[in-house]
Each structure stands twice: as structure tokens, then as C-alpha cells.
Image (cartoon, rainbow, N blue to C red; front, side, top):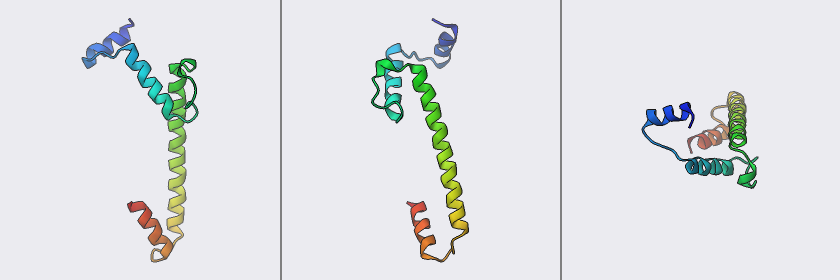
Length: 93
């Protein structure tokens, strides 16, 4: 057992098993579109974690882009218009 793993177990007071790690990685794999549907025994845990990080980065970029587009739309819309009312309604849902 690596010293890092034993330190982690000692610090947290709980023990995670290899089976639990395999189960968590498998569940994570099913959440990532690029990995979904692949056989779990053919994708390494490091690949799943790497793709997860990439996916999260892409989601952040998408959110930033949508936020910028929304800001531009709101800045160019008359606050009393029907379009502004629709946007406000979508944002409060």
C-alpha cells in the first residue's frame, strides 16, 4: 500500500476499498458523453478522470459563453420589451 493512500486513510478515518473505487469510476464514466457506452474494462481509471476534467472544462467554457451572450442580449434589449420579459421569466425559473 502506498504511503499516500495510508496517510489519506488515517486522516479521514474511513477506508475506501478498491471495489468502491472501481464502482465510482464506472459511475463517473457513465456521466461523461465521450465515454458513455464504452465497456468499462477497456477504459482505464486515469482515462476516465482525464476525460472528466476535460468535460468539466468544456462545460465551464460553455457556461461562460452563454453568460456572455446573455449579457449582450440583455444589454441590447429594451427592459420594458416583451423579449426582456421572456428572458427575465426564463432566468427566474
